[in-house]
Image (cartoon, rainbow, N blue to C red; front, side, top):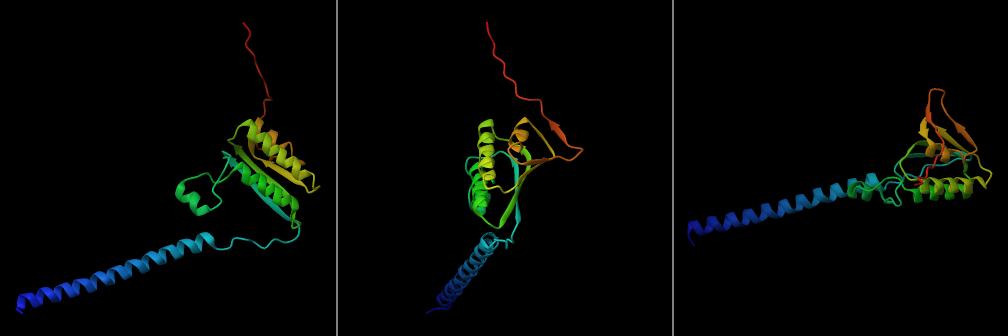
Length: 175
């Protein structure tokens, strides 16, 4: 065997070893990244609830029909974060949970239609059957936000708030 053949053989062995080391290092880095993502997204976020805990639900933005239950999938797939089904389910669970003493709805700007506002109001009426208090807090809003808030037992509005309540109106054109 010549010197050239021995050098080529040793270079091939060294390059195979480097390639194996790179594959192992990349696999370890990949597994570490996956473990970090899983740790931050799937750690238990179940807070300890004491007796008479107040559930605060923030109603803001469009209420989609469905939102991903997994926050990781919602972030990567770009789906909505809040849904009408999720809010009504939270109200239904709070209705039967003995640790929940009251519900506070922080109503900002509901970007849904009147049908969804009516469904949300019906869910609030259903929650009120438990005799648990449910309150609404409005900083600003219009007819739709006020309509949802009127299903609650009390509505709290700061003195400097901006409520644009003009009432409902319908027109028909007759020729």
